[in-house]
Amino acid sequence: MRKIYMVILIGLLVLVLAASGYAGNQGGTMTLDPFTGIYTFDREQQKLDARSYYGLRAGYNFTDSLALEAMFGYIPTETGSMAYADRDVQVYRVGIDALYHFNPEGNLVPFVSVGLGATQTDNGSQGMPDHGRGMFDYGVGLKYFLSETVALRGDVKQALFSQGGDARFNTEYTVGLTFLLGAEKKAVAGAPLAKDTEAPDVVCTNPGSGVTGWSVDRNVTATFSEEMDLSAFTTSTFTVKKGTTLVPGKVTFAGLNAAFKPANDLEKGTVYTATISAGVKDKAGNALGKSYVWSFTTVPTPKIVPAVLISLEDSHFAHDSVELSEDGKTILNYNAKLLRENPKMKIRVAGYASASGTHEYNKKLSERRATVVKNYLVKEGGVKEDRLTKIGYGETRPAEYEAVPSDIYSEAAKSNQRVLFELIVK
Image 1 (tube, rainbow, N blue to C red):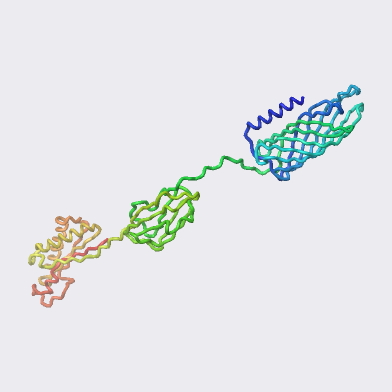
Image 2: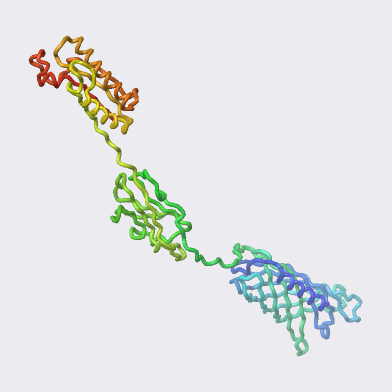
């Protein structure tokens, strides 16, 4: 029978070594251990047969390694003596043991035990006298944790006692389960993480390289491939320049993003160059392989075209007619070019006349001259007609007062014989 249980214990050991498990024995927990096994007696003195053994242990782990437990066991056996009619004997085993665990944080936890105990024999027929016996016991064992709170357990223990002045030994072999009550869940140690040796990268910037029309009041940002060492980011390692001139500002970092905030708005219509220095490092100490440089252009300065007033005097028309002179055509060609380059301009062509002649005649003459100018801008100058309007004022709204209206060659008359262009940027 002893050999059978030794084989069982060895088989359990091989099984637990081949299985995966969890760590381990924990201080500050209570334990409960039901068990079964085989109990052998010193037959020379006790004359009791080795039999099955059942029991329960309860204990407390003061630390991960040190524990104290009490036990109770029951062995239904027989006496080998033929002197008794009733050979059935019940043996009760009690004890208290101190345990010391090795490798308590591992899955496989060996231990040693030492303690005091006693046995009590009971023969129901009274044929064999009952008796109790104290003993000193010691042993070894093994626990294999199947989870944070359950372990397989095997023990081999020897009890030493004295009888007739001689040392006697009982031996027990047990297997069972250990339950940890109040255990905290422990993480199973895994393979160590590989050391980060990869250099960080700049994965994107805002604005991107070559971007035009960047707002003058926005931050310049860069996004990295991993978390960076924040202490490496300063206005020396993240710069923005206009030509060779540094832009004053401050640098902040959040998440994977570094941001340069200019102290003042950037200048419009200007090319800027941003640089992330190769000195910046990630949290593992890996430096950026080389400086990252990109350029962008801010929004252009709005093109402001002032209102333009163009005057065609009487000398630019044939006398008392609406026919353009060559000088008048030259002036209109120049201004048609200006109008084509500024397609948002809206134009009002206003014709005027001197005070000579009747009011009706002068008004119609000024209107005809305005019409001639408008048609010339459309047909010869390539200006869209929907951009042009016209009006004739005659001799009203004079540029200068004419004291003698009949003097058509006076300086005042010449000033009033004109066509005005009002060019307005919409």
